[in-house]
Amino acid sequence: MHAVVAIKQVPDTSNVRINPETGTLIREGVPAIVNPYDAHAVELAVRLKEKFGGKVTVLTMGPPKAAEALVECVEQGADRGILITDRKFAAADTLATSYVLARAIEALHAEEPVDLLLFGKQAIDGDTAQVGPGVATRLEVPLITYAVAVESFDPQARTAVVHRKTERGIEVLQTRLPALLTVEKEIAAIGRAPLPNLIRAAQYTPETWTASQPVAFDPARIGIKGSPTIVGKAYTPPPKKAGGTLSVAELGVQSVVFQALARIESAGVLQN
Amino acid sequence: MADPKRLWVLIEQEDGRPHPVSWELLGAAGRLAADLPDSVVEGVLLGHQVGHIPAQAFRYGARRVYVIDDPVLAYYRNAPYAFGISALVKKYKPEIFLVGATTLGRDLGSAIATRVSTGLTADCTELAIDPEKKILAATRPTFGGNLMATILCKTQRPQMATVRPRVLPMPQPAAAADGEVVPEPLGMTEAEVGVQLLRVIPNVGENVNIEYADVIVAGGRGIGGPEGFRLLEELAGLLGGVVGASRAVVDAGWISAAHQIGQTGKTVRPKLYIAAGISGAIQHRVGVSGSDFILAINTDPKAPIFQVADLGIVGDVYEVVPELIRQVKATRPNGGAHA
Image (tube, rainbow over all chains, first blue to last red; front, side, top):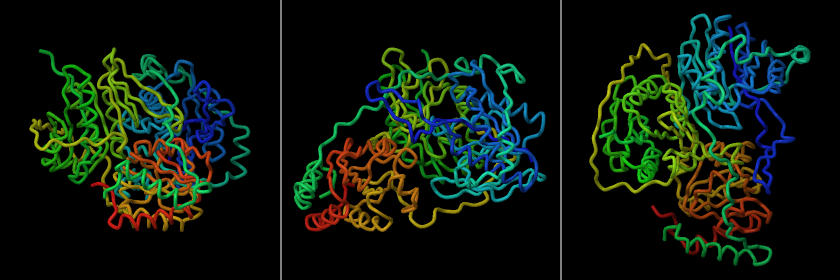
């Protein structure tokens, strides 16, 4: 069984702050982490490897620093890490990103056939949820987004049964393999990395692929050239004007609630 | 005469029931059309036995609905839906294509954009026509809601965007409206689809329709524990509303994720939003900013929720909410929100 997991190194957005004077993001000192959903995708791949044997390859496109994220995946049990990095990839939107990852996966598939492609359901910095579906479309493999469980997996029969979370409930879907899943955190709980993995990761250096080696990416389809969308402007959301507060300590709870209900009443938001 | 600029909206449906986000998007397309000369609002509908839906789309402003009705489309799967719609896009060359940022729309939108090689802006909170360039200016929150970015798609067409349910207002439907139904073939067979639905495990227990509730009483860490929701349920019941929650308390397991409001939960647009013991991180505030009236209750006068509240009460939830219940019972025996 060969599983390929595509991951992204992201700033921990729960720690992102805004410079109140300039209105810009303060990126310094914000820790870089493996996108949380991607870490669960890696965990699923490692569990399947433990059961069926085989190999887990982890792939990322990003700056040189993203090699750290691949090493973390090796700690989790991945066998091989590939960093696709080149200045030419800079400013890629989701269309250009899915092109690069799809071409890279094709190259990996040619070396060693791929049974399963795994992505996190979305990255916490961009939140687009577009790259996984884009790669599945390019590779013409079945896509199951928002996967929460793998009920059965049969690499010989080339079929799997996957649970997908939707608004109405859980869809139980049978898919042929290879397929691409984008996963929720429920897909596999992350355990503590075993010592041999930690030792291996400590000495592991991910492979580096560039825009021309070993895969020659089409220069017109990568980076800013290959990206139809551009950011026109970016700004911090303007604060809404606050309506003021009433203090229970100062006015007493009866009076405060009475005034609040009067305000709600005059706003006309409740039925009489 | 040149073809008009087509502003397309995906009319999302499941089991023959249209998703209301489709009407919200038709309303938005109508506003964009007003700023874009020679444009026309049209719908795209895929499914099986969905012939009753176009008439509703006309009432919300679609002039024409392209329909692919085929047994392969009886339930949603990415491949046949993306295949069918991409063929329509290539044939009719719409200028703009809006899709709901639902589970279905997020799965489908990217596949279409990839097939037709265009840009897609996810989870927009604001759509406008750039007055000079006459192109779509799609604004979305990024970095967990900490930053707003306006995205443009200068050369590729259509300019695609997804919008979450309830981010845009629901338009008033016309009493009656005519339009044209354009049937189209799918051109894909069941044997070509790699995924089959075996069964559906329905959501267990409560089915909360929090996105479309008129009154929401939501709880955060300040309610102290899961039992605090009983008090909020009582108040919500008196006001004809439902109970919501912050991410923190859903993560803590105090209430199910179906109640979660904010960036990683639902966007809501109630007439009245009561935030009880919710400090109001940016990720939560972006999910409630469409509310008509926000009442926040928190012991901390510096809580960020007060920045977006129409009225704040600095006080303890366990003092304020019981008093709210008492006074609402006394004055509004048949309380509830406007229909």
